[in-house]
Amino acid sequence: MARWLVKSEPDTYSFEDLQRDGRTTWDGVRNHAAALNLKAMQVGEEVLFYHSQIGLAVVGIARVAKTAFPDASDPTGRFVAVELEPVRPLASPVTLAAMKAEPALAGMAMVRQGRLSVSPVTDDEWATILKMAG
DNA sequence: GCCAACGTTGGC
DNA sequence: GCCAACGTTGGC
Image (cartoon, rainbow, N blue to C red; front, side, top):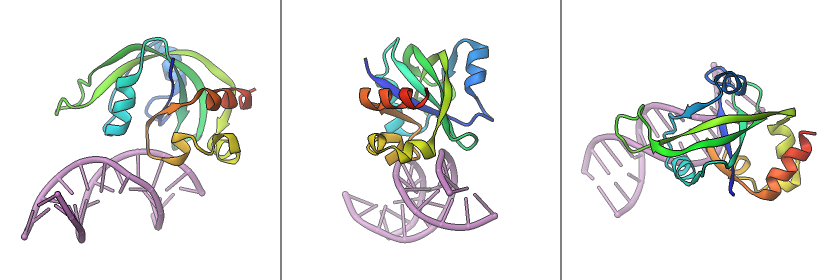
């Protein structure tokens, strides 16, 4: 089972919104590298939920509820969406600053390529972040 | 097919 | 609000 990280601006859609909704369509991704990651997601795989712009931290864990399908919000028909559902919030958010300061996460895709909105997370990185979350 | 210009994302 | 990174567009 692969693991992932997705970014969202909490002003637009926060982890709390996902908890309230119970499930959401993860659409609007307009980057091919990110889209390839969406296409690789399998039902049941876990996803770190990161708040960009405001918070700048991983705040919760979500799970893939539905594999990739055409993004209805994309007029070109080239991009895909998935569905996510909440698993649980982290006991304490793991900030970007803390992630950058942690040597074990130096190779992490989202740390190395800041603009990537959907990225893979290795098992080791996942374990490190959960440990940091307490 | 190359490359400069431009737009978008996201951290600071 | 600024700037860096980087993807996309369009002229040639």
